[in-house]
Length: 113
Length: 115
Image (tube, rainbow over all chains, first blue to last red; front, side):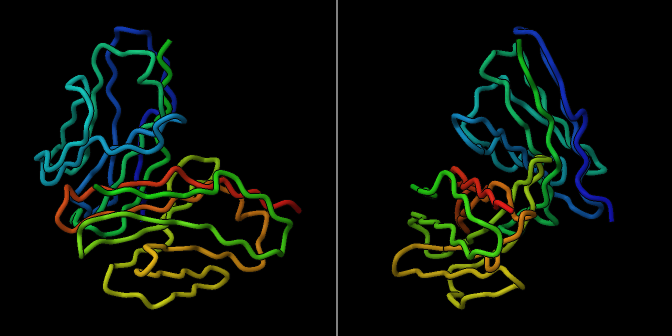
């Protein structure tokens, strides 16, 4: 059974640009959550999508957005990149999303220069 | 408000020693879930265990064991006879039944097992 796949693995962008990250969940999983991991702030919840709808959102500015497609694949977008957006972005999938174990991808490491 | 504290930032042990990683949590919910994840250098978080707030039984899985004590709001993780492959960052996390259904993570403990 394939795990959670995130693409790309590494990305370098310039301040002010925008970026789109992709996540393919485990087959049959309908919930996808995104987390940002930085040395200073640790692991922080960005948002969760379930059946193509954003179900929950963390405390991040509107520059961070996402969506989910009918096949449960999800994308997150960050517009007007700032240096502080440099982080490891992790995607997690669960079958229903309700307090069950989440399976994580290897992440996309974004560097903003 | 919810909070997870992992006071140990880094721990080093010699192979075959036992090691305990501490986790203390705060929540106002009566129904909540506790998790441990392992993050090896490759980056992905590997699920280790999930516990609900009504089940205080300790659990053992091979060399891993978990001690959940509601009285002290702790959910500690012990590795017996540590191995080099156990070297990783370990995260304790909390999710609440009535909340936004996301994981609140501690800051992690970096475990280094020295051969």
